[in-house]
Image 1 (cartoon, rainbow, N blue to C red):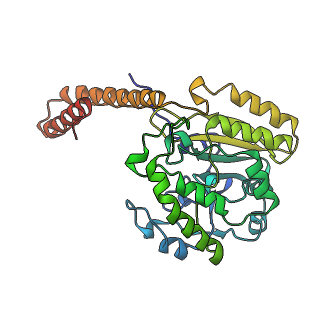
Image 2 (spheres, rainbow, N blue to C red):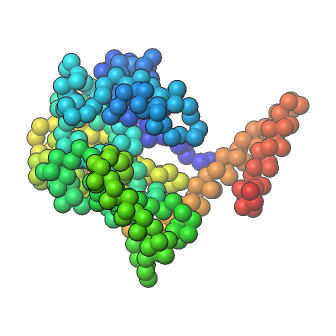
Image 3 (tube, one colour):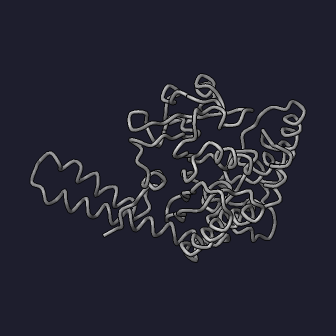
Amino acid sequence: MPRPMVSNRSRIVENIDIRTAAGLEIGALHNPIVKKEDGHILYVDYAPTEILRQTFRYPDASPDSIVETDIVWGQAPLASSVEQPVDYILASHVIEHVPDLIGWLNELRAALKDGGQLGLIVPDRRFTFDARRNVSSPGEMVEAYLLGYRRPSIRQIFDAAALSTNTPAAEDWPANGMTAGVPAEILERLPSLFDWVRTLHETQHYQDAHCWVFTPASFLDMREYLAALKLFPYEIERIFPTEAGEIDFAVRLRAVTGSEAVKDSIQTARRTLTPHEDDAVSPAQTAERQIHTHDVRIAALQEEIAQLKASSSWKITAPIRAAVSLLRNQTTGNP
């Protein structure tokens, strides 16, 4: 029987009493982790609600579904916008977008109580359109911090656009970077991308991008680098490696002031990572994960069909046929 799947959204709040704790959620948009009716939560974003709705680009949701922004986080530090430090902060698929990662993490720390929790859901570059990109380096992070980036840099934007795996022809390039040459479709897009980023530079237009690229292992590497620089004021309470068939991993951080506990927590977190969490993942390993996910789905469908067939109600004959059809299609690979 397949193991029940636990979502990363559940994992980063499972040890918080959201009914009584005060929290912030960054970038909730139309799908908040904690709803207003569930707890004391304030929604933080880079722009007011009306601006977010104008630029909303999710085909499966309406702009009207975006939650109301309580705090607009711009030039001023986040801590100046809250009356007092909060118990927890949540951010799902946000950390990769911030231009200055070190500054962002430290601003969040200033808005947290001592011992407060920061819950992050982070895309794993091996299973997203960032698969071709190298994981972020400590030098990139230090540069962004010392230069005080408030918008994605030209390098960050160019790399994100140039190396994206959005087109089918590019999907065959191995995620571990081993290749006989650069795919033609990348070379073809470079000239137009160069003209585009030059215009961005000249106009100083804000362009969103994935500024940072992680795997679970590289996330811990970066935290260790930053801890050595005394620029990472968190213990790693728990890291949840990327599940088979998923594209992201989850991390729970605890706001602290000392550095020794931070180092110890990173080493403890490393022991929770399995061998497949190494930075390089071959196409064969990726295919193996996809097969595992396929098997889990097939087992779940078979169980549902068995439960349906055990019933004598005429009303369930249509769902039975639909489930059998879906099982047959998944087994044979037919659309």
